[in-house]
Image: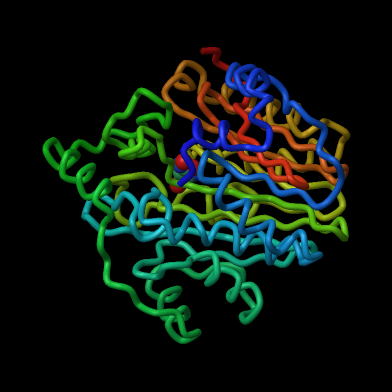
Length: 344
Ligand code: SD4
């Protein structure tokens, strides 16, 4: 996990510190993305994940390969809230959801998958080796094992173990607790505070455009921390946590999955981009739709959308402040703070 402060200072763009601090207030991306390829992903962990995606993109590889390899970095990180080291459900089991989509509208998904290190890679196999889009639970695990994926021992990361033990003290199932910094409740979507002081979130969504102009996307998560056993959010649902349309663009979501599903979030954003809205404007419109539906309850949840259009323009919009996303384009890699419906 990259320490954001260190990253800023170590970056070749260290001299752009002013731009970074402006971004923290929610300004626009401070540079124009210079053509293809480009990759964007959610939260701070996106910086490292984008680097892995770039290894494929800069050699002219496919976007779908890049977004698979990219988020696998986060899935493998025991420090992170994605993958096997993540927050468990309320019964103490880590259950994982992931999906992937390519430029031909091929898509694959797994949900409620246990003891498999790379759910996104299993989702890719579902896409390529079965006539289906989605496998869940023991069936998804059985398929993964048949495909040669190792059945791992479940071992919570130190942070997840500590958070779970803390949660067990009250065992209070009180969704939603919002995924907003400095409000580290012990419920679903509570980010983990790492020993380096950074906050980690339980999802990574990534979308990319390759050198050929083709798009791909992936999304992988442990879902809501201490969730009801069997609960599945938006992340593995094509059209909710992720959508790719190679004629228009791609979008991914993070935050309260139930509220992303109810507006078919990522698909809705892509449809608005089809009508000519910029990525940020499209994301904002769907956040507004959620606000309209949730009314006063909108203050209790976090949702964010992140989109990329065929022109290579990136944009995001969140319900609450605190959502960040990472962009990599050419030799530039930056972390941007999204605008939000509620202000700081
Ligand atoms: C879910 N959308 O399972 C995911 C959670 C998430 O940062 O994005 N957390 O609902």
